[in-house]
Image 1: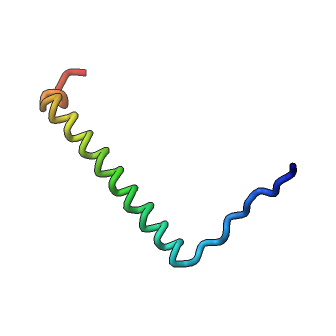
Image 2: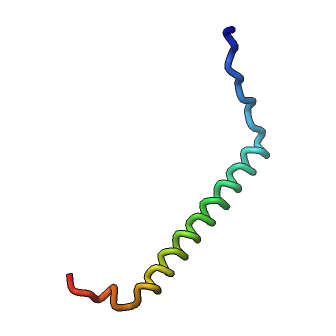
Image 3: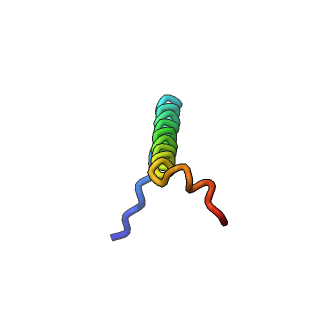
Length: 54
């Protein structure tokens, strides 16, 4: 019952480059969504939220 863990094969340079491009694309989309949510939140709260007394 002792099974050896499966070793992943090494990535080719093409696969590594595709993975890197996909990771960058995902990060860019995530950054865009966070920015959109932030801007929409500020817009919904109104401009007075930035000039309120502390």
